[in-house]
Length: 506
Ligand code: KIV
Ligand code: ZN
Image (cartoon, protein in one colour):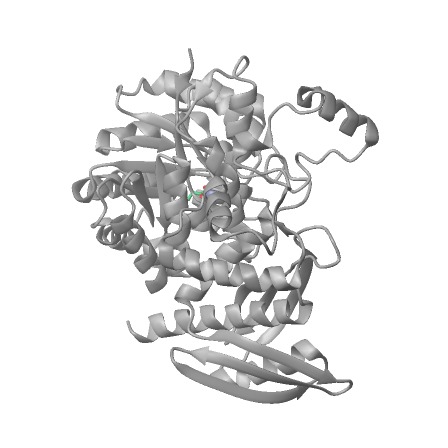
């Protein structure tokens, strides 16, 4: 018999707060809807007081998500708490998450507060939160470097003030598995919480122990785990959702705990997140890395062909992954494409399917063999187009030192065109985009990689562009690498325009 625990997903808060992972409101909403499909119990949607955009993202997610609770973060300050409660108002089920630091070093140097003052602030903060939102989570920041008896006292105060969830975070990724198990067991034993109160664990991965520590926290009595898709988060990241869930799936004999995650939604969630943020998953990352199920050596391949269990402890299908299969070509019909999309977990309406088919045929003209990954890229670019201001119609480059580029864009029904010269074809094309859109940015980073095998593979470009001091990631793909780079640059320009317009309209 497995003991149930809850998944509190913080991809859109702690995850999004990490460098290079920022998403705009629309992207956060798209990710939240995927997290709902994934089956997380709570989505921490953001930190509403941090910016107007954060507030709007939490509010929109609170309105759109129906099956999960939506949480908003607030420091233990009245202003933060009122702001988070306001953003969470449209939610059917919500959690107000408030926190204050509890370690000696944080209390003395960061808060400049005595332990007594911290106890008092925590009490007032939870009380206020509880008067505004029915479910309150209280976090003792840097709990793992705090004195355990102080944690006991603080926890009691928070529960008495109305907290429903007590989170003891390993904020700096310092604790080890045996210690965290003992810490949870100790605090729970001393506090003797009422039945409706659960303990939560939130680990950072500075020493690579976040998942092991989460497993140990479950053994110590935690019944909620805070984690992120692809393990993104501050510094070295948070507990990786997919690793935790698949340990429990694969080794339930050792860890008899279960949650509501739909494992076949793991890969679509991982893919979507890296597309939205531009943060690529390392090839060797457990579960969702490109090589996680790849068998390169002849001995392994021979074994897997004879019986997959020789070298596989899980199957790619379990996590919604697809073995890289050759699926379609120029002569495949619309029905074949629709069926493949369905198998890949994408449900498209007729209009979307028509547009996708058009793109698919255009790609099939340039590329003999079309793989699942190609189709996923086409679907992602289709979704991108629906929310973007400028669309690339054509890019032509020529010459050598200097290069010239001609770029044609569409904005609604308007067709726009300009030319520019630059140090290379991409530079020239970006300058032409700048002339058309009036938005100028500095290219800070540029990466390109092949998505599928073969000389005619699709190149997937990721760029980081700085606009007015703000770094924005863009993605684009094409069989032509210059076009892929230009698409990625234009994607970043479109994101910047969306952010700028949202701020101006407030
Ligand atoms: O790492 C941490 O302590 C946090 C808290 C706000 C929960 O992210
Ligand atoms: Zn954190």
